[in-house]
Length: 432
Image (cartoon, rainbow, N blue to C red; front, side, top):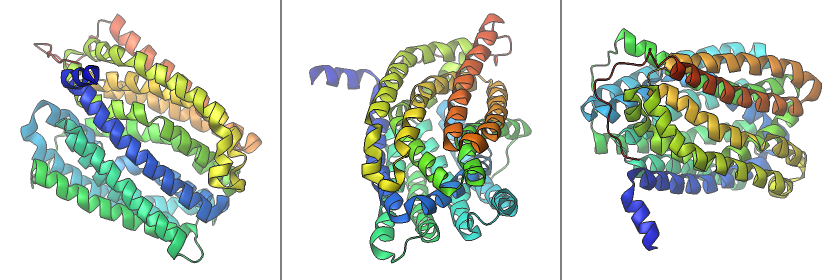
């Protein structure tokens, strides 16, 4: 206990990571509860339809806020007085561009899927994930910027808690659960959590500014952030969208269930990524050398965890059908194939953040776009022939290539003496 107390009082990053990890732990428990509830209520086919809708919407969702959340995080981490400007801009841009993107998704969905997923399901999921939940993401980044990670964790917990309530309604109040009924409850739960988040941020940090203008340079950089986030979403979710088209709803449900477990296992590393975000940007003021120096302190822990978590998922995978139902029996094998993703993600996230923090967001986006192209080509080749197995192989190849590509980009910058780093007169002193 004495050692733990010294550790907590000696490092703000450690305390913030524990706050985020505690929040992730509670959120994971709640997510597991509603995941099991909806999977058992909907069955593999209806669950596959919902997963497909979420995956398609996720491809465009990062562009609804145009990367302003990351600008807010970076600028407020360096100067808190800029909060009102970026909070207001984020809310306005999300509302406007979210509506435009949602219309685009609805227009192209029929060409992608035909009638496999009902349009009403896609509309409800789209309102939730393209517009409403992006506001929660802005709120989370606002608290991350001022390093009040307890409140960031709270936002995620509230969202998961409202969704558990919605899943309980689906299980016990809906006579015949369908993807449509769950999509409606899913939207209501997201709205409730978003109202809570907006009130919490406004009361704690201040009102949004009515001056919503961003400079051309900020819009360009915000676009790079959005491209990076969208690229990450594409190589995580395009396989599920393509599975609906080429593999059917049952294969999508099996693969989606296994992927959800992998995402849950990554949560501790995700907590550290969130806790370290503001510090990455402060270290990055001194260029790529500063941000990678900070990343090197964290990578041994995250890579070690990723290796252990991958091994655990492989061994524990047979319990999945007992939790989700007999229809998900094949998800055991899917989880075994996907388990190494925890290790790969535990490495490449810190390479990517090193580039962003040092002002090389465009380079990061370029590498990620290259991986998107690779992932799409692999899925087009492998899914029609091997169904969800092909999607799993494509995911492993893409995440491995991403780690290699980002590391190569960092090495190139270091060897060139980081000539393109943003100028910084004095390297900031930031304590781990």
